Amino acid sequence: MIVQPKPLIIVNNAAAKARKAWPIVRRTLEAAGVSFDLHETTQPGDATARTRDALRSGVNTVGVIGGDGTLSEAAQGFFEFAKRVEDVPSRINPEASLAILPAGTGNDFARSEMGRREPLEKWIDIFVSYCRSPAETSVRTVDVLYGVCDEYTTPFICLNASTMGIGGETAARVAAQGKFMRRFSGEGRFAVAALAALAGWRERRVRVSIDDSEVIEGNMNLVAVANALYAGGGMMLSPYAKIDDGKLDVVTASGLSRANVMRELARIHRGGHLFNPKVRIMQGEGVGIETFSSEDAMLIEADGNVRGLTPVEFRVMPRALRFVVGKSDNYG
Image (cartoon, rainbow, N blue to C red; front, top):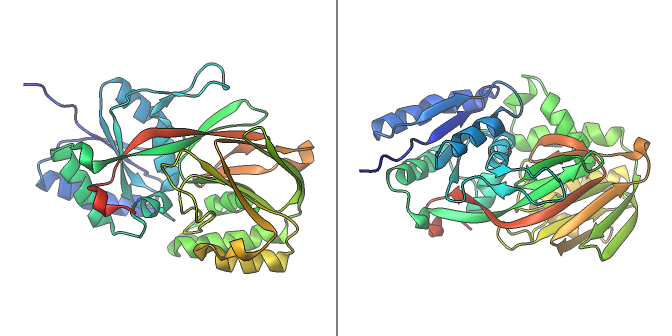
């Protein structure tokens, strides 16, 4: 009889919601007779390192209790970066799967997978069912984005979306929010951070090159690269984004006043910003985003984590990661 390796559970120990969710998950797993190994994160990047170690040792399932940032870190651990950043990362264990147990600020990837918000208990049931019987019908294979920033020296993986400009500044402010703000909803926290970032923002001259052919150049407020439907606490950066279409969606906004930006922030959760002619969306398989001076370099946010500074390049890795999402009628 072949003994299957136990799933690894990663808990974002720095997040109050994750610490609160973990006893609920543990009780359900123990009641269902599911054995597991546990790792509680201690610092940024910890989820990536622990996931890589687990997959190299033969683990086939990793469950993440946390938000999009922790999920993204764990997803990065599914890949081995090449010595040359120009080369696409390789999968450590192509048969391994990542499971979501959402307990974060926005939980955008979970919402994108289902097309709607689902309670933690629904995701726990999906995870327990998969651990008992890891059927292929419970797995969805999705695209991921491979990014390289900081003068093309720092590689990273992105699941939902990456934003630059006001988006990057907003993410940095969300990450720095204290206990008082953390009591509010993800949407509220992102809105407050965005307004604070907007107050000190100025447009930067940016060049965006899509698939080495279409080039957009000019002063911009925001550049975003979307893989999934939702990001930033429920914002629908691109209503056309699909997690498994082999494409990335590039969103640019130019020439918006602060009043314009505030109006679009109110509309972006439903995709209403697309009615503004100063907002454009294009699709491709790769994109390069450049600024023209070190003073204009923009912070890069990916899945809520600040990753570095422009210039940056993104490439889509089609159907590169397996996610446990339950039967196909669960997701949108």
